[in-house]
Length: 315
Image (tube, rainbow, N blue to C red):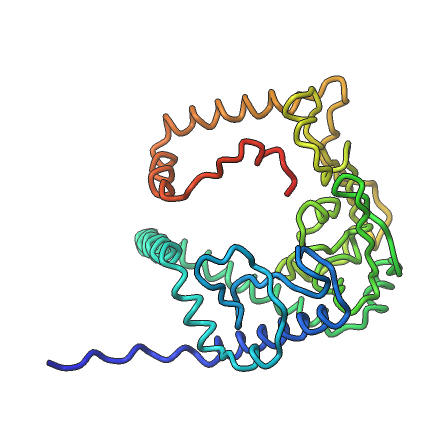
């Protein structure tokens, strides 16, 4: 019998991308250990979350995800090995993606010329957005700050996480406002932890850049969105935190434009009642909608968290 053909080699562009990410991660890990950083790690200062990449392959039965960064071990790992490990862990994701993609292609072919044209337009707009973001990344931070009328700060404090302040130095090397639309956003934390970034107005991730420098954005909350106090909502009458976002034109005088005002403390629906109403409406929707039932069956293999406090917990 004819031996099976070897699998196609990964695209060089993909391998190069992985190598760049590996190099950036190694640099960050080495710096974290050298300065004895203390982030989410529950280990000693300087120990990072392993997260299963590079040499951080957790042994069977291990309960920790934290490990010391070792340069020699990291340098011995290849991009091909990382790609192979990643591909071996998508037994559920890949079939779902391929099925969804095939159904999309079937609908696209059946829709005639209009849908393919709209898809190509969307792709072109995405490419143009990325190009603008790359151009802006090459500009000097001082020029972008001047265009927005903003002044980057050495430190500002955001109270979040139940009174734990998040101190941001906008001049730090890791802080990249050109990637995060932070010039137009007042005191946006730039953190990757959602409960600390909720106070900002713009999405965190760089693919939502560039900063269009059209409006200055401010978000105001009725209560701290990062406060870790689940029982205040589960057992009390406290409403969920509500925000109102306002935009003011940067380049020409204009009125402030805002989202709907938050309800007053006296009229706001208690969080526990809102959750009960949401659960009832979700159950009714699943009962009458065929697509919802299909999604429920397709995701039935996902093990549900036994923690009933999960919805109310920031973390």
